Image 1: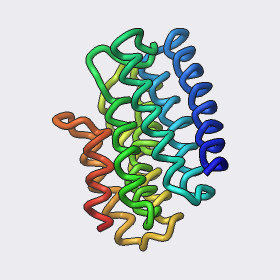
Image 2: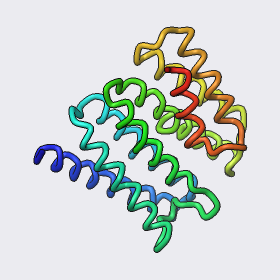
Image 3: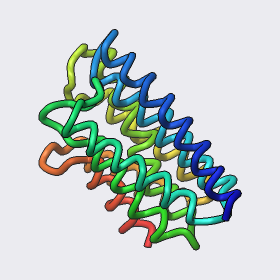
Length: 195
């Protein structure tokens, strides 16, 4: 129990540093870029740690609950610079982590692949679009990045070619739409395709 608590505290410390990096990037450059970097460094690295090293579900429960509480508190009291006024994406992002990891702890690969859509593919697609268009816009270049990143992740983690292509293609379409927040829609779509 003590090892799990110390591990959770170490990860929370790391995520605190990540949030400061995201905040710095948001203030110096752009809030959207700060958010996407936070998704990659926090969600992406955290997801790999969960998948490769963690043996107890207690650690991700503590970490995601703490992260969610901090993000909600900061949004209400004093938002991080990467928290956009009109978008609760970072809350939805963290909520999906806090729901899917414990729910699929016995089949971590399902949680990993579902959350990889927002931790890696969406984050990289957003950064490419921002670099090319200097605004928050949906564009085909980002969709191509999303598709190939997700395809490679699925293939690398043992999905067959057909399932990998299906997940990458359908999730690319879901990522491109703007009706539903993709931090919720993407992991749930991947989850449905994997189950």
